Length: 502
Image (tube, rainbow, N blue to C red; front, side, top):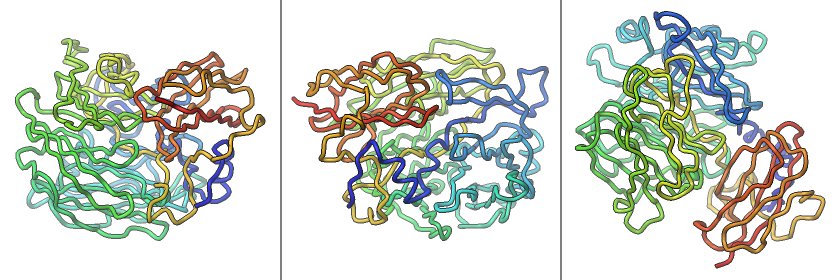
């Protein structure tokens, strides 16, 4: 497969394929209670904007209660969001034909007062090869049985109505089964398509779909691992940052960890860790940017697992214990998500005006720097973390399905030229792990990334000055790494290699 020098990668990829145009698909998060009938601005919508460091909090009026999922366009600007009842655009207006999602009795029960209550049951994805088309995958309750029985999709095309969008297909049934209320997705190993995963209810069966330029393939089904039949409510599913592992946590049920093959879409190597006594009926899971650590919240506790340990259950460390903070309700730990800045953000189980933050999630134990109520919000956040995929996951180099010539960042065997490196330097080089990165003068609003030669993203951080940065790869295996810097303001890219020796 063609190897591309890392400093030239992004510009070359843009000429080859549009699939990487959406690496900013998670730059603006939709938060808040929206149209909730409460007093003043404390009950309103908010946007968490990662174009700034730290992220900006923007109060705004949104045409819905409790936004559950969102997606941004190639520039990182909000494209669409939903609460499972309607779809709105960046102008905060319901798109044409974007009303009446999930119609029926439960639509009336839920949507008159809040969102269509599925804990993680809605997810937007851009259709590969079609930058204006967005699929919404969503789960609907059956009117007769009250069980979540249908996996649906709705297709929106933003090229209509002067960029304001139009829903072309709505509430299309993909599969009629009892589903758990969680949907997540991961990039296919070809670097272009998407695997979508929806676990079925009270079983160990998973429905998977493949979203391609031609549309949806599947559904496919696989039974593996524990059925977790004792729990439905208030958990979360997620993929590791590199897409190699899938996590499902249901309080009072337990934590299921599965290996995932991004080529075949098959699960393997199940590991189940029971939970129950120390939960309060809710929790979340999110992986670290370097894919080594898993963070699990159980209301009163924040735990860290080392996924590289020979005994993952025994690697659990407590990195946070709820301190009793209330605003006005208890701000316990609930669902989490990985931000574009490399930090992890957690909401609470109640409508409170704070979020929790893990500042250094790639660090072991208490060095991860978990800060309770680290972000104070101008309005109440809803019960749910908005759902989105990992847009900065690329192809699977060297795999059987890496056939499209869509190369993720790969270190060239040739050393970068002085022109490619510019003023960026690493000292010492080689290093045993710790090194200092000197940045080009005038660096502002830049994305710093470190890649292993395998193409795996090891570290990602947003920088807002040209001050030298100290990084540590001591927890990573020996080998060659690439450090890449993208200045978002000027578009200038710099890269340099560093050798880690033991």
